[in-house]
Image (cartoon, rainbow, N blue to C red; front, side):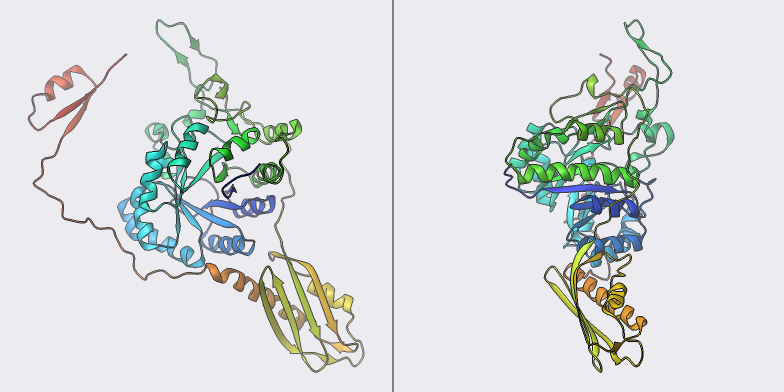
Length: 480
């Protein structure tokens, strides 16, 4: 299939272990939450140090990291905490932030001009007008509302050049994505503050007075949707203009992240590299269903608008076959180690177009037990928990040499550190010392007339208020 735009596979990570699994399984980018301001407050989430480490890790592998800042912030949080939280990440090279709050959007746009801004699905962008508005505000990408059809996504793509990110796998929200207030009203846990208790997954009794239906079984969940699985319609999604294929699941375990990411990586590669008819293997489709199922799966809203086939009617979760051994991405490197008597030890490393050289100590003539090439290679193979693995290592050495093992280790570690530094250097940037707060273009007119509208749920309320001269309009309850 020929695609006229870049395509990205975007995976979730609710922990550092899941982050490493996502990269190992083939994600082009990973989205994560920090210590605060993310819509998954109950995920493990990343510490500030882990975020800094993750930024370097993705850049070593040529990938990207996005941070969720997708809750509604209070004024004091915007002024006192957001800048200090983002500044070190921005300076380290964070690729983008995912934002719900337009005030936060404007603040970050002003203070961190090199940072890409992604409008969260919680902005509920549902059409071309929203795309064009956010383009004007400086957004580089819109995370489309989950409730859109392929035709609606295509219309958005044609209206604006900015990128579209769309969910392709994972949980669906019964309400417009992230806009439900049910958790906040029933339990004081606001989804807009990252604390949704998912009351839509609970069992309820459904009945209608003088009606023809009544569901009273104990475990009936009338608001619980099946999870989405769109692997069969990836060609249609790309044809609609979607740039980033997003997997939901920051609350899921790392094995789930690895399994789902790996499967979509497989079929995305098939799709982009072959002109053959696209077809999903039945076994692979069943594997995705076995990994996690809540009453089956559906293709979301891409080709249908609502309907009972999207409903799970249960909150029973089934998992099977989640891998225990998680993949770990390693970047291949080439090296040349030079060891000749009475000369410094040299190690040159190459990765992509980056070359570094480290030297330390002096190679000695061996008096009794010269070092063999096998022993030296065994020591140099100890790349441990680094992001690298040897593609090839050329060892050039004299016949009767000796170098302390400690010196060899220092040489290897120093060269690796230099290589990491050079690979990450292009992403570093500077921020201002103090944040800039948005100000109005002109002072507000305190004498302007304000329209006061009231909401009345009963006739008595309306009769009491309608004669008040300060009230210019009413919202009245209407029972169809």
